[in-house]
Length: 344
Image (cartoon, rainbow, N blue to C red):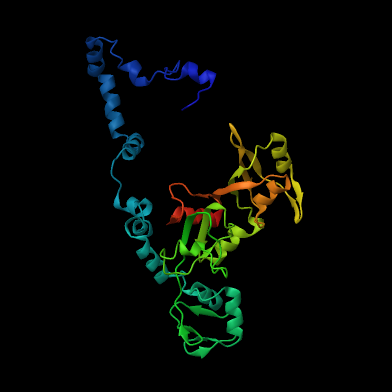
């Protein structure tokens, strides 16, 4: 709905005063047919029309206006402003083919650090790769490399412990996590993990971004992009998270104000970025916005005030929501979403 100001309501849809076009004045129809014919037969007016047609400056000015109304662009303008091959490829090709293309293309110059090449293969992290390089466990084109910081080409044959490594393409996906799943790669107690829900998503080895405790549900990101993972989890980047909290009993507005101002917990001071009732009719439901990544921070905030969190659902993380994703299902992030995560 469009809301108009008082002044706009008075004038909306009405002609503006004092604004009558030249054409409406001259050819409004109020003049008789006789006066119009006299105008055309006047030799002075004929001379003016002839002068205008022979004046290149005036013709040029009107030709620019006509060019702007042309429905078709020239070939040159289409090449400059039309869709490029990359956008067409993303529009018409499947996600699998896009990943294969990204893997084939790699960096624009084809050169990257050896530890990043190893990390992209999914074998280990960059830090672990540096340690293995220093131990002499990595070869490039058959030669042992022990210098950390060595750069390689995507076409080089990199082996670790005699096994040929293949650089992986970057994968980004979001899961609507159900309860009773732990956010870990391997659980020694044999409980179900979030990796069990996405094991058929891709061939690349992806990792959860941050953690959600076993009984917390909602948005959980996965990727093999270490740089993006650091950007999303490090507190200095202030990535926004929004949770829907269900409490065991009603909470007062005064206590919500206390959380907004800040509380002193056992591991330091903490406050919410925003907090309010999620449902005005049900004061057991609270929406809280926070950027801290401390362990079980939302539950501990309410436990500090004597409440028990019966249900906790993360509905928003760094601009990504679980909209149209059923519980326990996942989807790949779009190119626009990945770009947003990297830039903001």
